[in-house]
Image 1 (spheres, rainbow, N blue to C red):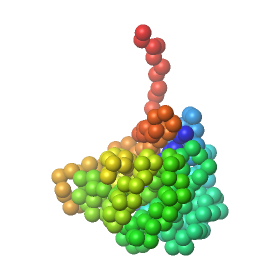
Image 2 (cartoon, rainbow, N blue to C red):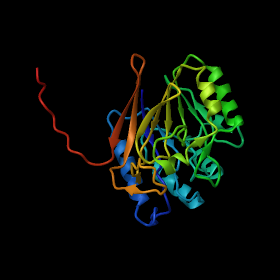
Image 3 (tube, rainbow, N blue to C red):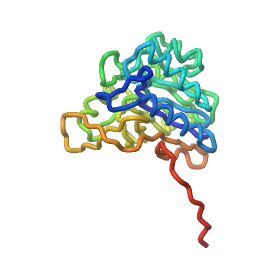
Image 4 (cartoon, helix red, strand yellow):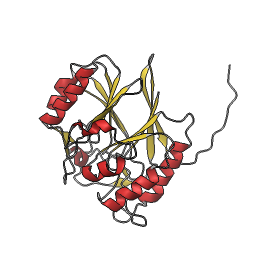
Length: 272
């Protein structure tokens, strides 16, 4: 099974730029879509881990719907701190990017994807109007119910905010809080093989309470790897990328970083 992870698109209205006018989100989104559509083999599905739009407006979601409908593989979404839950549901439910079971909780956009070898659980960590995330007891209880339904099946959790520190101070201030219950819960389930996040705008990976966490880079704007505890955010013109997660029963998950761009390939004769 192949899962592509796309994150932190920050799409605006056509012609607008983000991040102090330095970034063309339409161009980067079109490039990411073309890159994913050119993958061979094609992914079984695409998980978009939040911040689909930048300002949470109806116009932005309409444009996002228009562009993302060009993806060849089916995709699913989870909200980030820049997203609006109501507009997300209105936009993406008719497209199938939010399964019908997301209506089980009227406040949060949380659901399961069942029809694959790996079970996938979308967890909503967003707090309206705040950059940080949170897992309240209600959201954690919902996850507990879902995990109890199928405790032996290989499972992946995807959400926007990382549950752990990354060493980039300002982003750590905006990580997911209220994760004590999640930590206790996951200690009961060895079948949770991977936790996918976004939000950081750069690739990072860690083992958090014995569970692998993989953070996707942004498909547009990259945050600098400032590990010197500075208190302001810096952007860097590193290549944007997606993640490609391969799962096979014999090996579990392997994650590959796939930079977005046109890169030449040269075939080499095998050396025996």
